[in-house]
Image (cartoon, rainbow, N blue to C red):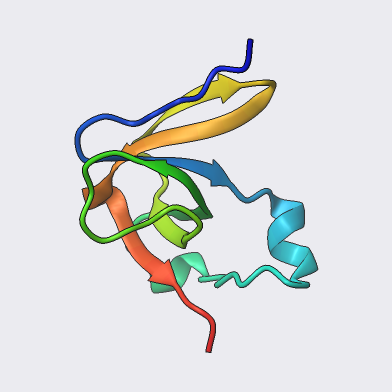
Length: 94
């Protein structure tokens, strides 16, 4: 049985990028910020599912606060569930 995680409230489900994803570039649009440019550590990933949110949508690449999520596992993949307010930026091409 294939289960699907559906965030509730103002939460988003994110698949975090790995170090390898960030380094290889390619078709992914990622933004690498040195720690000296941010007050708190942050991470990047792709939005897989959303609850009742206003700013982000499925498929967005986002920058989020590194210590603001709950780690969950689905089908052997590590995913993050966090509140929309902890999404720091949406990364857009162009």
